[in-house]
Image (cartoon, rainbow, N blue to C red; front, top):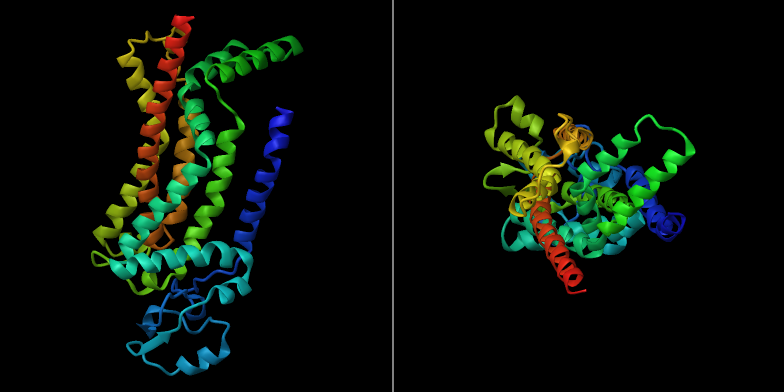
Length: 340
């Protein structure tokens, strides 16, 4: 374990540093919920109505004076933001937020802001999966063996002597080796996802195509809270689908494992017949994290709910793919054992 932590410590430190950097970034949204004019990232020169952006809270005093007396329906010209200008704000804005916003803008130029978000999300999730494939495979196996983990924990529950602790650690380690699990994997994936989520948030709030664009008539800058307050069903449906898909993406490994056990005619273990749900603690964690996301996203632009919805559906597809790989590896290993 010490070697494992030592080998991953640099990556963990980098993820923590990025996360702290994200939280230190100045907010591109003003108190009225609109994006500040001088924070918008455009790929080409565009015009928007004054009431679509915030003028009063921007730092650029020249812009503030120039557009101060404009009426709400008058047009404001937004010039393209260069990489250098974005990088001057900070390396996080230059290296992560600006490229993501530009990808959204470029795709939206051929379709609309909604498809810009969808395709950018798929690209992001695909890149994350390729970079953390082994870690995600390990994390999926970890979820699938939770009943066996619970059995070990119940076996040594209340035993605090050194011998019991050592035996519990040994059994847990053997279980990890049996399923080729690296405990640090799930932690690594989580810490990578956090700064990406913040980067996407800043990119979507600042991308010009999202600021003035729509998707099927939906204003992507409005919040789910706005939808609930004004009974705008499109916002409500997207928000609810986001919550459902988020739960589905986290519980998918469990569902796939149960389905596979039925296919393989695996008998229910004795420790699963005692009336105690071995997945209850993990399910509580999942529901808590989903509740946290739901609470956070209700006041964020609906574009972020849309992003999380597509991300969750993409992760469901990856869950199914990884489960198929795990089953294939298990069958190949079993065949080799029989030959030996």
